[in-house]
Length: 249
Ligand code: SF4
Ligand code: FES
Image (tube, rainbow, N blue to C red):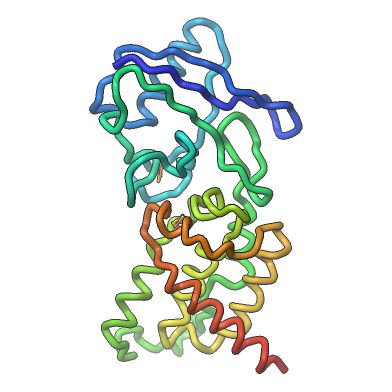
């Protein structure tokens, strides 16, 4: 396949960015999108040009770092996959493909296609954990009975890989689906209940501090989420937050 890539290039956080055209040829339909970018970067390096900076780590849909906006869609065409799981067979010979970084106030561009998503780490650190007594008085987790449907829903929420596609897709740059997944993961389990109120309040407060917008109610986040996190979790977050607010001491 021959393709024309239109890639966002930006030398640094404060630099003016622009779209640059790159013709690529001999693209196999079996390549992943990131492998295609690797080949382009090899060519650029061979010519003495600066390679395109993009994030990646696991390349198997687990780490959430390979976050690209491709032809106006987070993680490109296809549902339930990350950019590293996207294959070139989704495109046609002669296609023009726009490749851009996440665009959101909470994810400033570091360089080219790489954004700073440490805001998610700070939201997680604000309350996305369970405090466990490790003094030797531990209760075996398996000794606490949990209804199967709750365990399943908690597992579904825990599938969130923190990629940020929900934010990039939302017209308001809202992080509600991410925060909802992290809150739900614990709120559905007995181990998460003692800190549930503090968790919901702290994570929402940090989300607001980081500059993420309000939920736009479009549902676009659920559609573009590579882990198909359900909007149902946002409803649960809203309930958790409301109860925590009205019963705050
Ligand atoms: S909710 Fe989905 S889109 Fe948002 S960070 Fe988690 S995995 Fe990514
Ligand atoms: S590189 Fe880890 S999810 Fe894509």
